[in-house]
Length: 452
Image 1 (cartoon, rainbow, N blue to C red):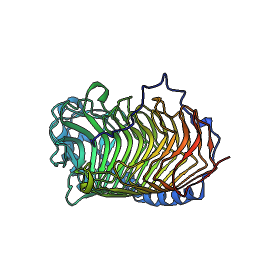
Image 2 (cartoon, rainbow, N blue to C red):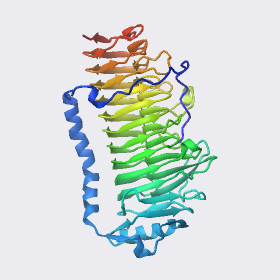
Image 3 (cartoon, rainbow, N blue to C red):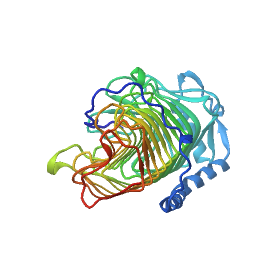
Image 4 (cartoon, rainbow, N blue to C red):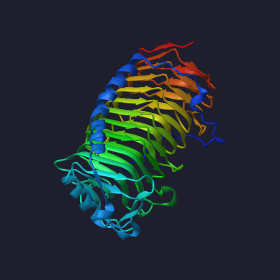
């Protein structure tokens, strides 16, 4: 979802060609710590509902879209026909199968009821946004006056929907027109027990289309997005908002096509109208993110963009960012944590980023606390040639463990910096290649630094 762009970093011109990206086989295997064992248990429990729902989906029978005389010629608007067919099969305890073809949605959103099942035949089953897609039947509150155009959504935002499955389908949202209107391929609000698997979404941001998000969830819970790919969007490949909780984003790919603004995976503890919310128990695992502009993975408590006494914050609690690959961030950071508590960042590989490989920093005057950053690999940071260290704990970070990480490919002043105003940051047992000014710059309070 669209948001005001962050005001940093203020770095100089970008250095020459980005250094060779770090690959998984560059590093030897690193044993996971006890905290990851706990993560595995929690992630398994979180994914259980979605996995059970997927199993139920496989047990139902599917009727073909051809049974409903739905044309797949890419010219006929079949949005309303798709919606009726999905609702009919859901009432009958069945699912809808999309044979290969192009299904044009050119009038209004396709709204899915509870118990909906939709399965395609792979990348050849394409749902295409038409150039005249109207605003969704649901009004999306947006303080900036943005008009939202949703290709797929759920039909009851007020009371919620549950038990929905979409698999093996491609979305083409390259027709998203310029202007204030933005398109999201799939957006669910107040939904639960949702499984999205093997979804392929192609945006057209590099050619001026307002294809904003690939997949977005707002105020939803117990959902899973897996084995999917989103390419060439404006804002975020996988976007999570509001009071969402207990969800898994696993084994997905985001390719930002080198656009200047997109985030790979975004977790925001605010509602779309910028009122505070709480996101809890988010599991972001084993994803590949490349060629994004803003940030690879952003755990963002969120700020309503007002100053002083009018400033309010959301928060992200209990998020686990584990085993992800982030490479090629052209403007900002690899992994960013802001206004959040109890966040685990472990076993990730981050390389070739414009600013910091990892940064803990508030958007305004919030705080970050109880951060665990272990067994990660950060390489070739500060590619814009500014003054960013590879890892930075900003002044509002209170309580962090940074242990067993490897930092290399020095084009930074320091490997790790702890800024004044931070406290209780422990930097232990890391392998840090010396930057132009040193390995660790610590100006925090009650910190502990011990590296070989």
